[in-house]
Structures are given as C-alpha cells and as structure tokens.
Image (cartoon, rainbow, N blue to C red; front, side, top):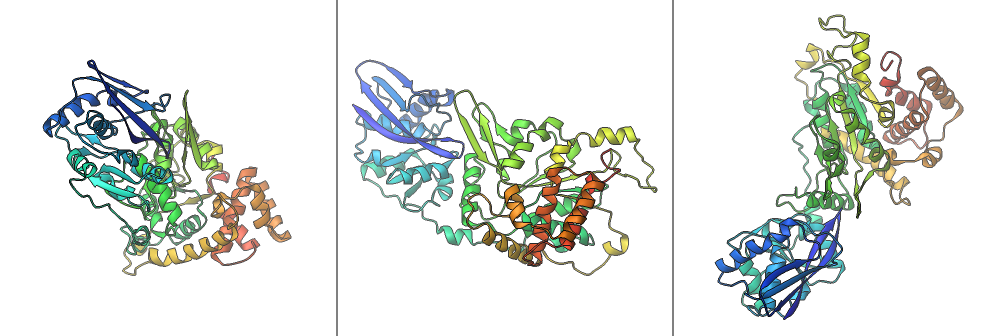
Length: 511
C-alpha cells in the first residue's frame, strides 16, 4: 500500500514542503531514499522502539520510503513523526483518511514522546501558504507556530495523541495566539535602565542619536569608564519593534532553535559574543548553514566588547553584511541568505594598557605597541561605524550623587518620535526604514546643505583627511540630529555636532 504524508525542510529562513511516500510490499527490508542525512537514517531504530512501546509493530515487510523532492538534502531528526505515521497508515495499523491534509513534524523518543524541533514558524507559514488544514508538532514549539493565523496548530506530547486524533478516537484543541496582544506586551520597566548611569551626559546623547537613526557606534575609553554598562542599556531606548520586524526576528530565532517556548518576540535582541568567536559562528554557516550572531541580532543590537581582541579576519567578514544588511552563505549545491540588519555597538580601550595619554597612569604603551594594537581594526571597518565617541571615567562627585538620571523610558519617547519622522520620510521605499539605511542617492536628497554647512564640512574633511564613506556617515548622523530636533533641514549646528563624533579619524589615533 502506498501512502503520502507531508513534512517540511527549512533552508535559510524559508521552508519547503517535503512529500514522504511510504510503500509497503512483499519482501523484507527498510529502504530510505531522497538524500536523507545520518540522523534521518537512524530514525528506523527510534521508530521501531516507539511503536513497540505504544502497542504497534514495525511491519516485517519491504518498506520503501522516498522523501521528495529527491534532489534536496534533508537533515535532522524532525522527520521521525512523519515517517512513523506514514508507516502506520501504509501498513494498515491505523486508518487515517485525512493524513495528507496535515504537516507532521517531531523528533521521537523511544517511549513515543516528542522532542522539540527547529524552524516551526517558517514551516507553519509555508503550510498556510500551501493550503494545509493543520500542523502537528511537539508541544514545546506550539507557541511559535501558533502565531500563524488560519492554520490549526496542534501541540502534541506523544505519538499516541496524533494517532488517536487521525483515527477520530480523541480530540485535540488547536492552539491559538492573539498575535497583536502578544506583540503589544511591552516592558516599560527595562532590566537595564539609563537612570542607573551617573554622569556621562555626552555619551548618553550619542547613544540617543545612534538609537534614533540606527547608527553603528564605537565607545573608546579606559577600563572602568562605563562602556559595557552603557552598551547594555542601549536596547532599552530603541523604539518598539513593528509587527513585521517581530515576525522576521522570531523566524530567525525559530530556525536557530533558540525560542524555548516563546511565541512572538517583542523585545529587540541583544547579542554579545565573546572575542574568541569564529567567522562561521559570527556570520553563520557550517555544512548545513545556520544563522550566526549577526543574524540573531537582526533588528536589534550586536555588542562587540574589546573590539581589538577579536581576530582580524573575524572582524573583516562583517564588512559586507554591515553594508548590505544581509549575509549570503554559498555551498556547492545551494545558497542561503539570512537578514542581518543590526546596530553594531563596539567598545575598546585606547591602548593595550587601557590608559592612553594619561599622565597619572603607571602603565604606558610605546607608539609601536599602540600602532600594533589599533591596526587590528581596519580603516574600512571603522568607516562603516558612524559614531566614534570617547568615554572618560566618571568623577567621584558625580558617582556619589543621589539624584537619579533621566530614565530610558523618557529617552525612548524622543527616539521613537525621531523614528516616526524617518518612517514617514521613507514610506514609499521597501528596504529603508531609518537614516542609517540611506544610500548615496537618498543622502543627496534628504541631507541637502546650505553654503555655511558645506564650508564647515569641507574644512573638517580636509583637516581630518576623511574618506568619502566618512563624509556620508557624517551627513547621515547630522540628518538624525535634525530629526531629534524635529528640524526639516540639516543646518550647520547639526553638521558640527556630527563631526565631533568621528574621534578615531583625528590625528593621534590611527597613525
């Protein structure tokens, strides 16, 4: 008897429906074809034990299973449940006429219980697109899949629940989630708040500008100046995610298997990888490509603490994703693209000892040591960072003040107002939502300068020997400062402030 059941494979952040054809005939043997990997080939042992422990049996006949399309590589243990139901229906042990109306996915334990899978959200989106009635999957993944309206999503704990439902012996209630209600559950009291930061008013201003325009920022200062403390508080002033951004972000975390019984993600991600990270872990990849840290930080913040400690080749692979806001991983047989539109926040000491030009410091670094330390960060990478700011240690009288600083909620209101101006400005453009995403054409259109501003920028360019890319960065930052002031045009005061935020371009820093 030949039976067709349906599963799904995830490539990048998109799913492809897989037709599992099970044929049982005279003879003995178990043949699994259609480019399965080792985890799928081993499934026969898990299936045999699970069936026996639930009162069923592996048919002692010739079982041929084809996973179509046969030229597409299938991987992982999530097809266990698909194969099990196919075998039971094909061998006549259960009667399930509607089995072809459902997508069935789940990893089996030997007792028939189910383990979580990856990529439940993209699979559910594809199932709805292709007109499937419902989706069976492990209970741990049900919240992420239930985000998709118009599809019956059943979270099950063991194989018996699926069998009873398909035979009409038991009932399962589909899980439903009010996506909008889930999305609007925002935290007005963030764990890390800017009100905890004493002093550092100029740095907070920088952070506000960076958040308002989505600009990359680097903080340079001695140990203990508060660089990490400030960076950790940046997500608390970012504007709330839009529903589209929340779905995109949830999809990536679903593919990486990082959601852990969470529905829709409504908080922007904050990723802080250790400096020993490899290229593949940062940008994504592997023999079966998985999203890296830059994709996990999509629509959020990627924080690289002690930037010069990262291997130079690791930093260099970030250059293209920073510009294109996506990363493409190519393999011999296929190519996947992951979105990676993130805000880069980096911090570094100004010298190996951490105390640059500090007369009170007992530790000093020679010019050669300084040059070697700073040369780990290439000029092209620094060019892609819009704001460079020096962080100085907070004096004692500021630290001991009882007065509370401005809270993150208040700063976020100003940031959100500036973002709304940008959203309106770029309404007709598909891939541009805030100032940092503008290309040269948009900069010329929205950052037109008067003669005074042009002269000011020309002088700065000549004195600081800035590149053409740095010129564009200054104009983008100036446009954001103007948006925070609700000013329709960029004026010389906005340009002057933006020029201040290019510390590393000044003499005495990089040679």
